[in-house]
Image (cartoon, rainbow, N blue to C red; front, side, top):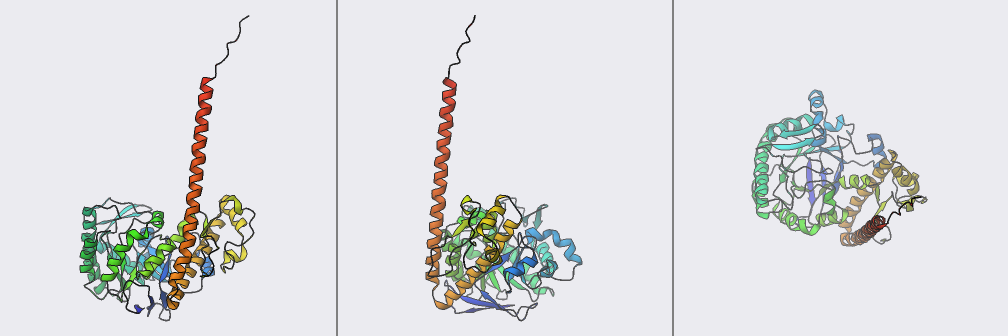
Length: 430
Protein backbone atom coordinates (compact mmCIF):
# COMPACT_ATOMS: atom_id res chain seq x y z
CA UNK A 1 0.00 0.00 0.00
CA UNK A 2 1.22 3.49 -0.84
CA UNK A 3 0.18 6.96 0.23
CA UNK A 4 0.62 9.75 -2.31
CA UNK A 5 -0.04 13.35 -1.31
CA UNK A 6 -0.80 16.25 -3.61
CA UNK A 7 1.38 19.29 -2.90
CA UNK A 8 4.18 19.67 -0.37
CA UNK A 9 2.93 22.49 1.87
CA UNK A 10 3.25 21.76 5.58
CA UNK A 11 0.51 22.55 8.13
CA UNK A 12 -2.08 23.10 5.40
CA UNK A 13 -5.12 21.19 4.12
CA UNK A 14 -4.09 18.64 1.54
CA UNK A 15 -5.43 15.90 -0.69
CA UNK A 16 -3.94 12.44 -0.95
CA UNK A 17 -4.67 8.89 -2.07
CA UNK A 18 -4.07 5.42 -0.66
CA UNK A 19 -3.47 2.97 -3.50
CA UNK A 20 -1.79 -0.30 -4.51
CA UNK A 21 -3.50 -2.19 -1.68
CA UNK A 22 -2.50 -5.86 -1.77
CA UNK A 23 -6.00 -7.34 -1.24
CA UNK A 24 -7.70 -4.67 -3.36
CA UNK A 25 -5.25 -3.50 -6.05
CA UNK A 26 -7.99 -1.67 -7.98
CA UNK A 27 -9.19 0.40 -5.01
CA UNK A 28 -8.05 3.99 -4.48
CA UNK A 29 -9.02 5.84 -1.30
CA UNK A 30 -8.99 9.63 -1.15
CA UNK A 31 -7.93 11.60 1.91
CA UNK A 32 -8.83 13.41 4.12
CA UNK A 33 -11.17 10.61 5.17
CA UNK A 34 -12.67 8.92 8.22
CA UNK A 35 -12.29 5.24 8.99
CA UNK A 36 -15.50 3.43 9.95
CA UNK A 37 -15.56 2.92 13.71
CA UNK A 38 -16.29 -0.67 14.81
CA UNK A 39 -16.62 -2.64 18.02
CA UNK A 40 -15.82 -6.31 17.80
CA UNK A 41 -15.43 -5.88 14.05
CA UNK A 42 -18.96 -4.52 13.50
CA UNK A 43 -20.29 -0.98 13.22
CA UNK A 44 -22.40 -0.52 16.40
CA UNK A 45 -26.14 -1.19 15.90
CA UNK A 46 -25.92 -2.34 12.27
CA UNK A 47 -25.01 -5.54 10.43
CA UNK A 48 -22.78 -5.86 7.39
CA UNK A 49 -25.87 -6.22 5.17
CA UNK A 50 -27.28 -2.94 6.48
CA UNK A 51 -23.88 -1.28 6.11
CA UNK A 52 -24.04 -1.92 2.35
CA UNK A 53 -27.16 0.24 2.27
CA UNK A 54 -25.18 3.20 3.69
CA UNK A 55 -22.50 3.35 1.03
CA UNK A 56 -21.26 1.32 -1.91
CA UNK A 57 -17.86 3.01 -1.93
CA UNK A 58 -14.75 1.37 -0.51
CA UNK A 59 -14.02 2.23 3.12
CA UNK A 60 -11.43 1.60 5.81
CA UNK A 61 -12.77 -0.17 8.90
CA UNK A 62 -11.12 0.52 12.24
CA UNK A 63 -10.43 -2.65 14.26
CA UNK A 64 -9.63 -1.73 17.91
CA UNK A 65 -7.71 -4.56 19.58
CA UNK A 66 -9.40 -3.81 22.90
CA UNK A 67 -12.75 -5.03 21.49
CA UNK A 68 -11.37 -7.89 19.35
CA UNK A 69 -8.76 -9.38 21.69
CA UNK A 70 -11.05 -12.36 22.33
CA UNK A 71 -10.70 -13.29 18.63
CA UNK A 72 -7.15 -14.50 19.29
CA UNK A 73 -7.96 -18.20 19.68
CA UNK A 74 -10.19 -18.30 16.60
CA UNK A 75 -7.77 -16.32 14.42
CA UNK A 76 -5.03 -18.82 15.32
CA UNK A 77 -6.93 -21.45 13.30
CA UNK A 78 -8.35 -19.10 10.66
CA UNK A 79 -6.37 -18.66 7.46
CA UNK A 80 -8.02 -15.43 6.31
CA UNK A 81 -7.69 -11.80 7.37
CA UNK A 82 -9.57 -9.99 10.12
CA UNK A 83 -11.65 -8.17 7.48
CA UNK A 84 -12.78 -11.50 6.03
CA UNK A 85 -13.45 -12.93 9.49
CA UNK A 86 -15.85 -10.11 10.45
CA UNK A 87 -17.65 -10.38 7.10
CA UNK A 88 -16.34 -7.14 5.58
CA UNK A 89 -13.80 -8.46 3.11
CA UNK A 90 -14.62 -5.65 0.67
CA UNK A 91 -13.22 -3.11 3.17
CA UNK A 92 -9.67 -2.16 4.07
CA UNK A 93 -8.85 -3.06 7.68
CA UNK A 94 -6.83 -0.88 10.06
CA UNK A 95 -5.86 -2.32 13.44
CA UNK A 96 -5.60 0.07 16.40
CA UNK A 97 -4.86 -0.57 20.07
CA UNK A 98 -7.52 1.38 21.98
CA UNK A 99 -11.18 2.14 21.27
CA UNK A 100 -11.60 5.87 20.46
CA UNK A 101 -15.30 5.77 21.31
CA UNK A 102 -14.84 4.37 24.81
CA UNK A 103 -13.06 5.97 27.77
CA UNK A 104 -9.64 4.40 28.38
CA UNK A 105 -8.91 3.98 32.06
CA UNK A 106 -5.70 5.80 33.01
CA UNK A 107 -3.00 4.29 35.20
CA UNK A 108 -2.58 0.62 36.16
CA UNK A 109 0.81 0.52 34.43
CA UNK A 110 3.26 -2.35 34.72
CA UNK A 111 6.88 -1.98 33.65
CA UNK A 112 7.30 -2.49 29.89
CA UNK A 113 3.64 -3.51 29.52
CA UNK A 114 0.50 -1.72 28.30
CA UNK A 115 -2.85 -2.40 30.04
CA UNK A 116 -5.68 -3.29 27.67
CA UNK A 117 -9.15 -3.15 29.24
CA UNK A 118 -11.12 -5.83 27.40
CA UNK A 119 -14.62 -7.14 28.16
CA UNK A 120 -13.01 -9.95 30.14
CA UNK A 121 -10.76 -7.75 32.24
CA UNK A 122 -7.29 -6.26 32.05
CA UNK A 123 -4.77 -7.74 29.63
CA UNK A 124 -1.10 -6.73 29.65
CA UNK A 125 0.68 -6.37 26.31
CA UNK A 126 4.27 -5.89 25.26
CA UNK A 127 5.58 -5.37 21.73
CA UNK A 128 6.19 -9.07 21.08
CA UNK A 129 2.70 -10.17 22.17
CA UNK A 130 1.14 -7.32 20.22
CA UNK A 131 2.93 -8.19 16.99
CA UNK A 132 1.87 -11.84 17.37
CA UNK A 133 -1.74 -10.62 17.41
CA UNK A 134 -1.12 -8.38 14.40
CA UNK A 135 0.23 -11.35 12.44
CA UNK A 136 -2.83 -13.40 13.41
CA UNK A 137 -5.24 -10.62 12.33
CA UNK A 138 -3.36 -9.79 9.10
CA UNK A 139 -4.69 -6.20 8.78
CA UNK A 140 -4.10 -4.09 5.69
CA UNK A 141 -2.94 -1.24 7.96
CA UNK A 142 -1.88 -1.10 11.59
CA UNK A 143 -0.17 1.09 14.17
CA UNK A 144 2.81 0.06 16.23
CA UNK A 145 2.19 -0.42 19.94
CA UNK A 146 2.41 2.79 21.96
CA UNK A 147 1.76 4.27 25.39
CA UNK A 148 -0.93 6.88 24.77
CA UNK A 149 -2.08 7.25 28.38
CA UNK A 150 -1.58 11.02 28.58
CA UNK A 151 -3.81 14.07 28.40
CA UNK A 152 -3.56 17.80 29.05
CA UNK A 153 -3.39 17.23 32.83
CA UNK A 154 -0.70 14.52 32.78
CA UNK A 155 2.38 15.23 34.94
CA UNK A 156 5.84 15.38 33.37
CA UNK A 157 6.85 12.03 34.86
CA UNK A 158 3.93 10.22 33.17
CA UNK A 159 4.61 11.99 29.84
CA UNK A 160 8.29 11.05 29.87
CA UNK A 161 7.44 7.45 30.72
CA UNK A 162 4.93 7.35 27.85
CA UNK A 163 7.63 8.49 25.41
CA UNK A 164 10.13 6.02 26.83
CA UNK A 165 7.68 3.13 26.43
CA UNK A 166 6.58 4.20 22.94
CA UNK A 167 10.17 4.45 21.69
CA UNK A 168 10.97 1.03 23.13
CA UNK A 169 7.91 -0.56 21.55
CA UNK A 170 8.65 1.15 18.24
CA UNK A 171 12.14 -0.32 18.01
CA UNK A 172 10.85 -3.81 18.78
CA UNK A 173 7.84 -3.58 16.46
CA UNK A 174 9.78 -2.25 13.47
CA UNK A 175 12.29 -5.09 13.81
CA UNK A 176 9.54 -7.73 13.89
CA UNK A 177 7.74 -6.03 10.99
CA UNK A 178 10.86 -6.09 8.81
CA UNK A 179 11.38 -9.83 9.40
CA UNK A 180 7.73 -10.85 9.05
CA UNK A 181 6.63 -12.52 5.80
CA UNK A 182 2.98 -12.11 6.78
CA UNK A 183 3.21 -8.34 7.30
CA UNK A 184 5.59 -7.48 4.48
CA UNK A 185 2.80 -5.79 2.49
CA UNK A 186 0.92 -4.28 5.44
CA UNK A 187 0.91 -0.50 5.79
CA UNK A 188 2.66 0.07 9.14
CA UNK A 189 2.44 3.40 10.95
CA UNK A 190 4.55 4.77 13.79
CA UNK A 191 3.10 6.56 16.80
CA UNK A 192 4.11 9.96 18.19
CA UNK A 193 3.53 10.12 21.96
CA UNK A 194 4.34 12.82 24.50
CA UNK A 195 1.13 14.50 25.65
CA UNK A 196 1.19 18.30 25.48
CA UNK A 197 4.94 18.56 26.17
CA UNK A 198 6.69 19.71 22.98
CA UNK A 199 10.11 18.54 24.15
CA UNK A 200 8.73 15.07 24.85
CA UNK A 201 7.14 15.03 21.40
CA UNK A 202 10.49 15.96 19.84
CA UNK A 203 12.27 13.18 21.74
CA UNK A 204 9.76 10.69 20.36
CA UNK A 205 9.97 12.01 16.79
CA UNK A 206 13.78 11.91 16.85
CA UNK A 207 13.54 8.12 17.06
CA UNK A 208 10.33 7.34 15.17
CA UNK A 209 11.15 9.53 12.15
CA UNK A 210 14.61 8.04 11.60
CA UNK A 211 13.25 5.10 9.65
CA UNK A 212 11.64 6.01 6.33
CA UNK A 213 10.10 2.60 5.61
CA UNK A 214 6.91 3.20 7.63
CA UNK A 215 3.86 4.59 5.85
CA UNK A 216 2.69 7.26 8.26
CA UNK A 217 2.22 8.45 11.81
CA UNK A 218 -0.50 8.50 14.45
CA UNK A 219 -0.50 11.51 16.78
CA UNK A 220 -1.44 9.86 20.07
CA UNK A 221 -1.64 10.90 23.72
CA UNK A 222 -3.88 13.98 23.39
CA UNK A 223 -6.76 12.44 25.38
CA UNK A 224 -8.08 9.26 27.00
CA UNK A 225 -10.74 8.63 24.34
CA UNK A 226 -14.49 8.55 24.90
CA UNK A 227 -17.24 11.19 24.59
CA UNK A 228 -15.24 13.86 26.45
CA UNK A 229 -13.04 14.34 23.37
CA UNK A 230 -15.95 16.08 21.63
CA UNK A 231 -15.58 19.05 23.97
CA UNK A 232 -11.79 19.44 23.83
CA UNK A 233 -10.88 22.95 22.76
CA UNK A 234 -9.17 23.10 19.37
CA UNK A 235 -6.97 25.96 20.59
CA UNK A 236 -5.46 23.68 23.26
CA UNK A 237 -4.41 20.94 20.88
CA UNK A 238 -3.45 23.18 17.94
CA UNK A 239 0.08 24.13 19.15
CA UNK A 240 0.96 20.48 19.75
CA UNK A 241 -0.42 19.17 16.46
CA UNK A 242 1.10 22.05 14.50
CA UNK A 243 4.54 21.42 16.03
CA UNK A 244 4.38 17.70 15.26
CA UNK A 245 3.18 18.12 11.67
CA UNK A 246 5.90 20.69 10.95
CA UNK A 247 8.56 18.18 11.99
CA UNK A 248 7.20 15.05 10.29
CA UNK A 249 7.91 13.90 6.74
CA UNK A 250 5.35 15.74 4.61
CA UNK A 251 4.90 12.74 2.29
CA UNK A 252 3.67 10.46 5.09
CA UNK A 253 0.07 9.81 6.12
CA UNK A 254 -0.91 11.56 9.36
CA UNK A 255 -3.72 10.31 11.58
CA UNK A 256 -5.53 11.43 14.73
CA UNK A 257 -8.31 9.41 16.35
CA UNK A 258 -11.09 10.36 18.74
CA UNK A 259 -14.65 11.70 18.91
CA UNK A 260 -13.75 15.14 17.57
CA UNK A 261 -16.64 17.42 16.65
CA UNK A 262 -16.79 18.61 12.99
CA UNK A 263 -15.42 22.08 13.80
CA UNK A 264 -12.29 20.57 15.38
CA UNK A 265 -12.01 18.12 12.46
CA UNK A 266 -11.81 21.07 10.07
CA UNK A 267 -9.16 22.73 12.25
CA UNK A 268 -7.06 19.55 12.21
CA UNK A 269 -7.43 19.15 8.45
CA UNK A 270 -6.18 22.71 8.02
CA UNK A 271 -3.06 21.61 9.93
CA UNK A 272 -2.45 18.72 7.52
CA UNK A 273 -4.11 15.70 9.17
CA UNK A 274 -5.31 13.05 6.70
CA UNK A 275 -7.07 10.27 8.62
CA UNK A 276 -9.78 10.25 11.32
CA UNK A 277 -12.58 7.88 12.43
CA UNK A 278 -16.36 7.90 12.81
CA UNK A 279 -16.52 7.33 16.59
CA UNK A 280 -18.19 10.77 16.82
CA UNK A 281 -21.20 9.33 14.96
CA UNK A 282 -21.47 6.62 17.60
CA UNK A 283 -21.61 8.97 20.58
CA UNK A 284 -24.15 11.18 18.78
CA UNK A 285 -26.33 8.12 18.14
CA UNK A 286 -26.02 7.00 21.77
CA UNK A 287 -27.62 10.25 22.93
CA UNK A 288 -30.49 9.74 20.43
CA UNK A 289 -29.36 12.61 18.21
CA UNK A 290 -28.98 13.06 14.47
CA UNK A 291 -26.36 15.13 12.65
CA UNK A 292 -28.04 17.76 10.48
CA UNK A 293 -25.36 20.42 9.95
CA UNK A 294 -25.51 21.80 6.43
CA UNK A 295 -22.99 20.75 3.80
CA UNK A 296 -24.35 23.38 1.43
CA UNK A 297 -22.07 26.42 1.57
CA UNK A 298 -25.01 28.74 0.90
CA UNK A 299 -27.34 27.25 3.52
CA UNK A 300 -26.94 27.89 7.25
CA UNK A 301 -30.59 27.41 8.19
CA UNK A 302 -30.37 23.78 9.32
CA UNK A 303 -29.74 23.00 12.97
CA UNK A 304 -26.37 21.45 13.76
CA UNK A 305 -27.92 18.48 15.54
CA UNK A 306 -31.41 17.22 16.44
CA UNK A 307 -32.24 15.50 19.72
CA UNK A 308 -35.03 13.19 18.61
CA UNK A 309 -36.01 12.34 22.19
CA UNK A 310 -37.56 15.79 22.54
CA UNK A 311 -41.36 15.82 22.45
CA UNK A 312 -41.42 18.53 19.76
CA UNK A 313 -40.66 15.84 17.15
CA UNK A 314 -43.58 13.57 18.10
CA UNK A 315 -45.78 14.87 15.27
CA UNK A 316 -43.01 15.91 12.88
CA UNK A 317 -43.38 13.88 9.69
CA UNK A 318 -40.44 15.41 7.85
CA UNK A 319 -37.24 13.41 7.24
CA UNK A 320 -34.33 14.01 9.62
CA UNK A 321 -32.56 16.12 7.00
CA UNK A 322 -34.53 17.20 3.91
CA UNK A 323 -32.61 16.29 0.78
CA UNK A 324 -30.51 13.58 2.46
CA UNK A 325 -30.34 10.41 0.36
CA UNK A 326 -29.72 7.93 3.19
CA UNK A 327 -32.18 5.09 3.78
CA UNK A 328 -33.38 6.62 7.05
CA UNK A 329 -34.30 9.98 5.53
CA UNK A 330 -35.86 8.45 2.42
CA UNK A 331 -38.22 6.09 4.26
CA UNK A 332 -38.70 7.33 7.84
CA UNK A 333 -39.82 10.51 9.61
CA UNK A 334 -38.58 12.38 12.66
CA UNK A 335 -41.81 11.51 14.48
CA UNK A 336 -41.39 7.78 13.88
CA UNK A 337 -37.77 7.81 15.07
CA UNK A 338 -38.85 9.88 18.11
CA UNK A 339 -41.29 7.08 18.94
CA UNK A 340 -38.60 4.41 18.50
CA UNK A 341 -36.03 6.07 20.77
CA UNK A 342 -38.68 6.97 23.36
CA UNK A 343 -39.84 3.35 23.76
CA UNK A 344 -36.23 2.12 23.36
CA UNK A 345 -36.83 0.04 20.24
CA UNK A 346 -33.66 -1.43 18.69
CA UNK A 347 -34.63 0.04 15.33
CA UNK A 348 -34.14 3.57 16.69
CA UNK A 349 -30.32 3.58 17.07
CA UNK A 350 -30.05 1.51 13.89
CA UNK A 351 -31.78 4.20 11.81
CA UNK A 352 -29.81 6.96 13.54
CA UNK A 353 -26.53 5.15 12.84
CA UNK A 354 -27.41 4.81 9.15
CA UNK A 355 -28.09 8.53 8.88
CA UNK A 356 -25.17 9.74 11.02
CA UNK A 357 -22.54 7.61 9.29
CA UNK A 358 -23.92 8.53 5.84
CA UNK A 359 -23.93 12.23 6.70
CA UNK A 360 -20.41 12.05 8.16
CA UNK A 361 -18.98 10.36 5.07
CA UNK A 362 -20.67 13.04 2.94
CA UNK A 363 -19.03 15.61 5.22
CA UNK A 364 -15.58 14.32 4.26
CA UNK A 365 -16.52 14.19 0.58
CA UNK A 366 -17.50 17.86 0.85
CA UNK A 367 -14.20 18.64 2.60
CA UNK A 368 -12.20 17.11 -0.24
CA UNK A 369 -14.24 19.01 -2.80
CA UNK A 370 -13.73 22.28 -0.91
CA UNK A 371 -9.97 21.72 -0.76
CA UNK A 372 -9.94 21.25 -4.54
CA UNK A 373 -12.01 24.40 -5.05
CA UNK A 374 -10.23 26.42 -2.35
CA UNK A 375 -13.51 26.96 -0.47
CA UNK A 376 -12.65 25.16 2.77
CA UNK A 377 -12.75 28.45 4.69
CA UNK A 378 -16.38 29.00 3.66
CA UNK A 379 -17.33 25.47 4.76
CA UNK A 380 -15.61 26.04 8.09
CA UNK A 381 -17.46 29.31 8.65
CA UNK A 382 -20.80 27.69 7.75
CA UNK A 383 -20.41 24.73 10.11
CA UNK A 384 -18.85 26.79 12.91
CA UNK A 385 -21.84 29.16 12.84
CA UNK A 386 -24.27 26.24 13.14
CA UNK A 387 -22.18 24.59 15.85
CA UNK A 388 -21.99 27.76 17.96
CA UNK A 389 -25.75 28.33 17.68
CA UNK A 390 -26.35 24.75 18.76
CA UNK A 391 -23.96 25.01 21.72
CA UNK A 392 -25.57 28.28 22.84
CA UNK A 393 -28.98 26.64 22.67
CA UNK A 394 -27.78 23.68 24.72
CA UNK A 395 -26.27 26.04 27.31
CA UNK A 396 -29.48 28.09 27.57
CA UNK A 397 -31.54 24.92 27.99
CA UNK A 398 -29.16 23.68 30.68
CA UNK A 399 -29.35 27.02 32.51
CA UNK A 400 -33.16 26.95 32.35
CA UNK A 401 -33.24 23.41 33.75
CA UNK A 402 -30.86 24.34 36.56
CA UNK A 403 -32.94 27.41 37.41
CA UNK A 404 -36.12 25.32 37.38
CA UNK A 405 -34.52 22.68 39.59
CA UNK A 406 -33.26 25.29 42.06
CA UNK A 407 -36.75 26.85 42.18
CA UNK A 408 -38.29 23.47 42.92
CA UNK A 409 -35.73 22.82 45.66
CA UNK A 410 -36.55 26.17 47.30
CA UNK A 411 -40.29 25.46 47.00
CA UNK A 412 -39.87 22.03 48.60
CA UNK A 413 -37.83 23.56 51.42
CA UNK A 414 -40.49 26.21 52.06
CA UNK A 415 -43.24 23.58 52.08
CA UNK A 416 -41.24 21.43 54.46
CA UNK A 417 -40.70 24.42 56.78
CA UNK A 418 -44.39 25.30 56.71
CA UNK A 419 -45.30 21.72 57.54
CA UNK A 420 -42.92 21.77 60.49
CA UNK A 421 -44.50 25.01 61.79
CA UNK A 422 -48.09 23.73 61.65
CA UNK A 423 -49.43 23.30 65.18
CA UNK A 424 -51.51 20.18 65.67
CA UNK A 425 -54.68 21.18 67.53
CA UNK A 426 -55.38 19.43 70.81
CA UNK A 427 -58.34 17.08 70.83
CA UNK A 428 -60.81 18.49 73.33
CA UNK A 429 -61.70 16.26 76.22
CA UNK A 430 -65.25 15.66 77.27
